[in-house]
Length: 230
Image 1 (cartoon, rainbow, N blue to C red):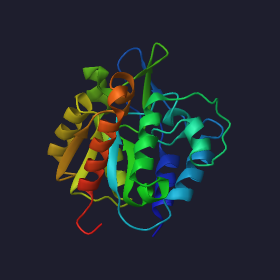
Image 2 (image 1 turned 135 degrees about the horizontal axis):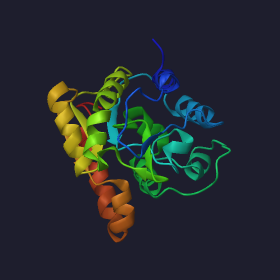
Image 3 (image 1 turned 90 degrees about the vertical axis):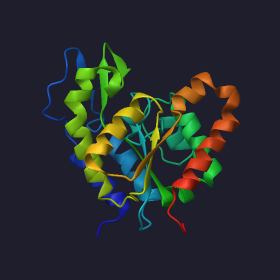
Image 4 (image 1 turned 45 degrees about the horizontal axis):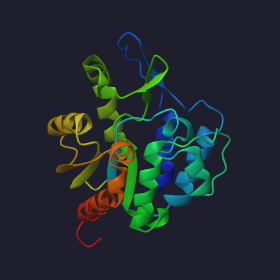
């Protein structure tokens, strides 16, 4: 059987813009035809995800232009990819706000090697969305939610086959992202329980003074989500 890393890479290589008509004004953010994106994400997963075994999944919303929309690695901007992971990349070195918090809790957990042995970060939609030149969340428009739900469901299903613990999934975003995820999970029973967490961007933008408290919230949720004996 292929390693976790190779399954992630194959899944990503096979990702195409779905034949789904989006509402007027919306377009897909598709980074995988950019020079360097597949090379960067392949280097990341081959560095950290070769160990066998299942992972607990954390789900974000969808990629943005400065993070996974460039590097292909969720919540990892070009700066973090180079400085934290030692993976050189050709992308403009602009910071992405959410990446700052995510890499804080990765280090607080014990570093990327330990984190990657236990967890896998993805997004409900592994492709992002653009409107008027700006990032858009899939849930920002009710017609966009309806249009993309089959794609989201298919991507969850395919990624779970990499090796997912099904007792608990963590959802980064306690509002609309959690609401949509729980509704989907009620239909498809992917996981026994979905636990909501404050979104990293919310923490960094509005609650930075309470950063240590939110790190503790994440660390407790990460620990509680692991199977007994892990």
